[in-house]
Length: 85
Length: 421
Image (cartoon, rainbow over all chains, first blue to last red):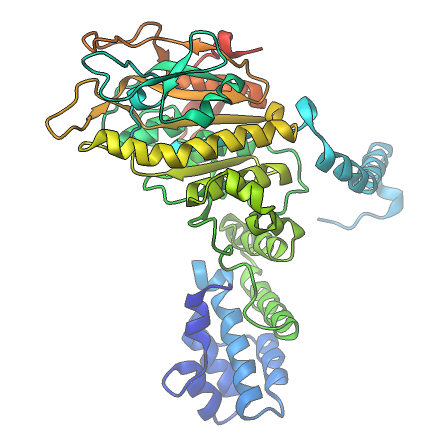
């Protein structure tokens, strides 16, 4: 949760998927879907999608990066990521 | 579970609910009392000073000066009539009457890893099962649920740490590698607003995962672990790890070493309600230059041990804290060509006391000539652990079923009567 590993993985920059998804996804929906596919290898459910799309609504640049970083943080800290099924 | 309507609640259920309600209201008051509790009434804890590598009995609690095997080590008198310990421990000599000395521990494990396993669990290594360490067994008995920090803590770098074994990974120790550093990873990386967003996001995705597989998800302990971590992150009890809050004079009394400061942290942790703390001192594997090695480590162990015992007694915590000072085995009576001593599991020493155990008892005797291999009055390690578990209040002979379906006693020893008050 608070360690260096996750912190380094989710820090948005030009060369990683966090920065890439934040900057290049054509729509909010595709941005969320890409993050889910990258971390959990599944698309988001409609509930999940609308929850995260709402957070992305109206954001650009830095604030948007922050939202995407938090999305990745949450995905990497789930039971689903750690244990799959 | 079906929702209960008031009319469906039986009289017994109603009483149960009422009792639970009363209890939860009463808890804060009980808590305040538990925190201030001192003396024999307090829930018992265990502090283990683990001397990694195999400390020499002849350079610690069982010196034989003036003999062929004694080396240059001299003996110091103590307040216990007839008890003399190595001269490397002048300050511990003034406190050792609060503890007892066993000079005749016997083991069949002369390898570091196997010996450490045996001395931490009371069981010899067995490929079919991982036994819980004595620290884990003590931790499992916690009834005080106001403790929000890990209840089993290991300080320092131990190559072979004890595990929760078949009790479960939640009884593994929380590791503090250097007591002088801040405890790692207990602060969120982002501000409150973002942290809240992260946690509520997490909840959304967790709900999806749990749907239809609640039991599987629970078995992973993932959510419980996250929850415990969050509780710990916001707990005032984290102060127990902050030895810099102690006055300079107290810190100095324990010695400047990481081990000394770790012993101080152990006292603070136990005071907060932690059940088991191990503080590790490495460097006892003196196959060469045994006497220099033990002198150097003596300078670290002596003030730390003395200050710990003194401090625990001053704060009226000694009655409720078992102190054990032990390593994986002893060292040979014979001094080798490199002025070293080798591994010796037959007849080695340990200190044990506090927790309501009898003090000033000296058990066993090794041969001053180093010829006889077995000590007089040999003490088996499982008996030592049954003694500790019985004073801590653990039903040490109860059998649990291990993961492969085999019933196994927590401890196969019998308490040593002479150490019980």
